[in-house]
Image (tube, rainbow, N blue to C red):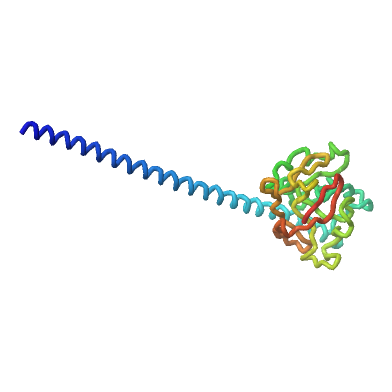
Length: 246
């Protein structure tokens, strides 16, 4: 009887150990499944967050360009329907060479119409919003600030005249709703959109790695829309063979 009792206790111990091992094995499998699920969810969240971030940047950028365009339209309302004259005929605004150059007097005028300093720079390219660009006159000895958006202002020296915007009536058979006035800086040097070297080293605004995604474009009628890079065209080149797309 004693032997049988001992044998029964021994079997019970084996059974309990077996149960613990089985339960432990199940928990390990369950843990692997949970970890896998967490990794999948985290990956989806990261991808989703990246897309949401890009959408937010585009929306913020669009708001900036709308603000500047509206200020230019207000200027035109106060000046017989004419946009700023940046040619030699008007020394007060003279000086812009590349599309993203803007005379300090014109910048001040637009700021008086509600544009803030940070609004002159695309949030997708925050590196441009620094003193080197804002205080460019100290470097270039010209009264010009380098902003993060390009504008096709009348008299800009290296913008071909056929692209200039003199008023808000459209030109070259384009209606105001089709005539580009301002745009995200999308420029390349030797095919490289991530390294544009002038006096300062810059890049295009909306990039994925080194590839341009596109940019916001504003028009003479005041509206702004996103234009994918595949729908952009090489329009003209400026000094150092920098090609501008919109």
